Length: 227
Ligand SMILES: *Cc1c(COP(=O)(O)O)cnc(C)c1O
Image 1 (cartoon, helix red, strand yellow):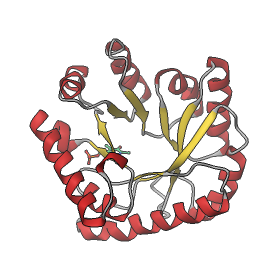
Image 2 (spheres, helix red, strand yellow; image 1 turned 180 degrees about the vertical axis):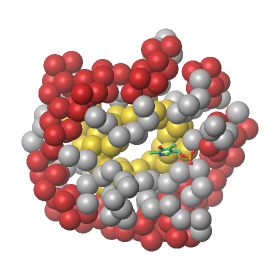
Image 3 (cartoon, rainbow, N blue to C red; image 1 turned 45 degrees about the vertical axis):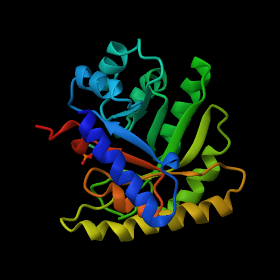
């Protein structure tokens, strides 16, 4: 498992070298969905500290099982229902999938109650697909101005799950659209910190970095295939 992590880190480094970026600016989120806590532990021992989960209940089980590892940072990367917002706030450090005023409001309320500040990304449906969650690009400014007033949420940037294609290079255009959108929003909302851009998965995280990703979400390449 340490070998896999080294391979992923090496690819991050070479993608950075191609575009003159610094590997220290890239966060690898190890996506552990469907994998047992013991595998998270194994990867932790290789030096990985940031993990991502898609399902609240499954995530909570692992967060709880590994609560002795104080420096793990847990990202929630699945679709979040409002009735799970309280649990997401309690167990996760980041929610990458905020895509409505409703969910943002719920997270802000519970973060306030727990006395913590939750890091959030706004999920953008960049391909405008019916099958995907996320706010449409044209709705993004409205959502950003709404959430900017929430004092218990720390807006960190944007996240996307780009349209699937069997051709890796097809992803590049979505990545560059997201980078342009992030820049435009950073200009329009100078009082917000929109420095993070979460995009790219096992198949294409190197392309995502070349186009400006600061966070890549890598599951299969670290943990092996899911059943
Ligand atoms: C499962 C998942 C990933 C990781 O996908 P891999 O192809 O296994 O790297 C990344 N992001 C999200 C939102 C996911 O659900």
